[in-house]
Length: 111
Length: 115
Image (cartoon, rainbow over all chains, first blue to last red; front, side, top):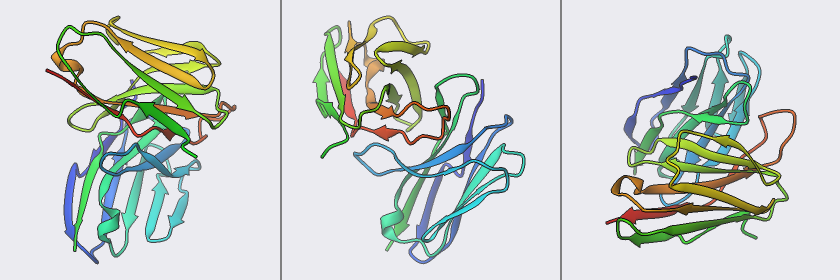
């Protein structure tokens, strides 16, 4: 079974700081997705990375897919309170219609 | 304008009861999912339907029975509820294509508390 481990599990930082969240696996994934889930809501897709080494930017968020397609990172520059939430990575289980979700990173940005 | 909707949003019930959660999507998608999110926020797939056909059935107790009357609806019936069933249940949908990079759209979740 493919697993996705995220680190750190919890992160509490001050507004304006930078941070990086990691998503790691021992398995190769054809693609990885990053979601943000706000309290009381369902996860919302932020980005999908497909090619090894790919970097995608979404305003202050930078996503990178590892060269070997076994890991990904999410870097937030100058974090804001609105970035607070649960960040989840997810990847397709090979040969099925199933998505495997990571263990999650709970981010709190203090004003 | 809601893309994926679930009812009810909150469900508080006694152990041993039977309950149902409903999900509807108006995105024209043909694949729908049920996920369970536990207290540690771990999101785990339970079932998936494609064009009303069950295609994923994880190791879920048979007290849980999904039903898809049509492509736009996927309901979840739970018999003999147990304390451990307390969790947030999310419905999701996506368009089926040759690629699994299609976006999954999640509903707002149903918070189930079994007393």
